Every structure is written in structure tokens, then in C-alpha cells.
Length: 74
Length: 285
Image (cartoon, rainbow over all chains, first blue to last red; front, side):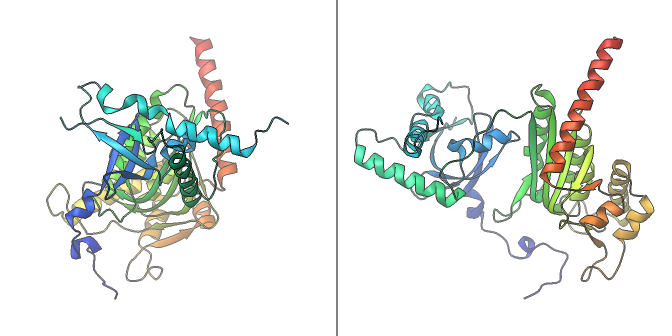
């Protein structure tokens, strides 16, 4: 199906709010990582954001790595 | 030869993972005023069961192969060049659904400031593979890059479309991969500007901002840029032009065809030049 419209796809087919909630960006040691929540409460690293090329070689931030986040609520 | 057997290297790395830096920052040692701060603890915490441990090490190895296609990542000395990737859609005021790959300006702008402030960083390389996106967010990123005091070089890989064009030309010198393309088209009539539907004049003014930015930062003439922008017959049901690598250089939009090697060489040249200028200034003072 081809829709010829100036509207974007998500304006026509709204996205479920839950889809937004399973992903989040967190800051760890000054570096931004995008994580996805897993059913067991852990998070999987999806994307890593830094301008320092060396940071991408740090094995602790490898995408796919499973981590636990200690979230401080207050 | 001083090479370690691969197995020992592997276990060393696992120890690093297990006793790595994250442990020291677990929640109970965290100061209360770290609002919203989040710390990591490693997944592998079961230290009294060597068998299970071994399995976990193995699964971690499998994971690494799955994610990176290799077990070990290369290490190299500290870099004086930082890299700013601009990928997917450039996200503006509206959050896009998570399946979109996006670059957020609220992430990039602090990074650009950090690059400017950090004395160890001498140059910035901007990697573009973007389909474009929000005009204001894109222009904001482009303005930030162009106002950096440090040498900057961009490489367009794959695509630098739409609002990716001003970002590509914002650097001191720009490269485009031979197969990469840039789509130049007028601003679309979608979306709202600060909650108000815009008039045609407003859109025209906005477009003028893009055109003036691109023509100020590259050698393309405004007439030529507008001609490409309003060309018909290139895109389905739309006006505009898809400019491929060599043409982008021919039109004066991009400085040169090239990839990583050429870009790094140019950036190192610019860094050396920048240093020379600074030394000269100090002598005069």
C-alpha cells in the first residue's frame, strides 16, 4: 500500500504509549546510553552516544550488554 | 614476541567486566543529591559459583560475537579527534516513535560544547548518514558546528539529505563518499511552528534561512541551489534533486570526494595550521 500524503506515518497510525516507555536514555559516568527494558527488570544497551571514539572500544558499553540500573527515585 | 595467549586475554577482560568501574557507584554509596542519576551494576554478580560463572563468561562471549562479530575489540591510544555522528532522522520538538532511528539535538549540542571546552580535543569529524528531519533542530546543529573554534571536517556517507545539507557544509571542509547522495528539496508543508499553522510567507522565510546558510558555508551559488531545489522530474511527486557524490562537488556544495583517509588527513592538516596560527598570535602579543 502506498499512501501519498504529506503527513508522516505516525500521524496516521498512532504509536502505543507503551512503546515509548520501554526505551530510555540514561547517563552513566557522563556518557549517554539508550537502553531497552527487559521482562526480568534488567536493561539491554541498544545505543551508545559519545564523541570520544575511544569510548566505543570500552567493553562495558557494548550494545547488547545486559545491565541492571539502580534508579534513585527521589 | 610479547603476545599473550588468547585465552588469558579473554579472562582478563572478563575480570574487568566483573570488577569494573560500575561497582563502585552502586546505589547505596551514591550521594542523595544525585537526583535522577543512575548507576550500573554488572549483570554477573554470582561470585561463589565458579561453574555458573564460567557459563556466564561463555554467554558473554557469545553475546559479543553476536553484537560485534568478534570477541575482542581493538584498543588504540587516546585520540585528539572527536567524532559526531548524525544518523537517522534529526528529531525536533516532537518525539518520534521508538522504531525510528533519530539524532536528538538536545544530545548533540551539549556534546559540541564539550568538544569546544575540552583542551585535549583538537578537531571534530562529523559523520553524516541522515534523511533529514526538523528544520530548526538541523539548523541549530549546523550553526553550532560552524561556530566551533576548532577545525572541523564532515563526511557524507550514504546520505546527507534535506536538512543534512546545511550540517554537511557547516564544517571547515567537507567530503562526500562517491556513492553518497544528498537530496535538495524545498521545506515541506507539514507540522506546526510553535503550535501555530504557518503561512506561505513564513515557510518562504524559513527556506531562505536554509539557502543563505548553505550558500554562506559552501561555494554553491544561491541561483544554482534554488534551481536544484525546485527542479522537477527527479523525484516522484515532489520537486527537488538527488545529488550524487561527484555532482555535489561539481556544484560546489561539497569540497571533495573522499572517505575516512582523506578526511583524517585534511583534519590533521587543519589542526596543524590552527596550532601554527595560535603560536603566531602569542608571539605578537
